Length: 91
Image 1 (cartoon, rainbow, N blue to C red):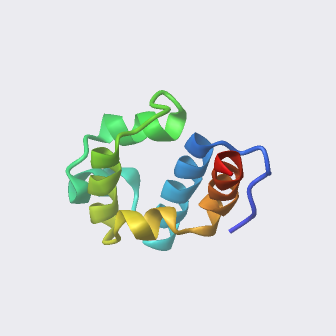
Image 2 (cartoon, rainbow, N blue to C red):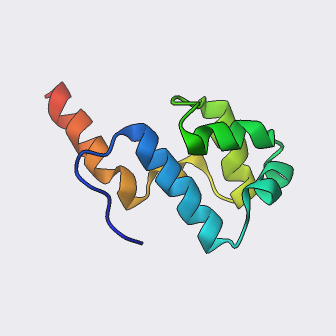
Image 3 (cartoon, rainbow, N blue to C red):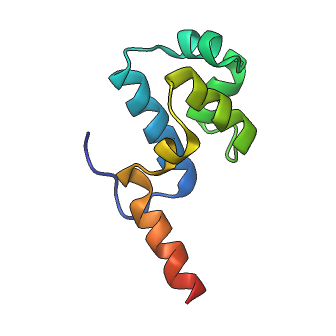
C-alpha cells in the first residue's frame, strides 16, 4: 500500500484502512455489509465522506466482517502518525 500524506486526518485514515482491508480480503462493500451486519449505505457513507465520525460500535461490526479486532484495525501503520500527534499534544 502507498503511504498517506502527512496531512491525513483520522477520517481519511479510516477510509484508507477500510479500502485496504477490502482489497486484502477481496471483499467488496456489498459483501462486507452482509458479513458485518452494517447497512450498505452506512459503509458507503463512511467511504464517501458523508459520515465523518463512524461510531466504535459500527467500526467493531465492520471489523467483525473482516475477521479482525478493533485493536488490529487501529494498530495499522496508517494510524501511527495520527497517534503520535495525539501523544505529543498531551505531553
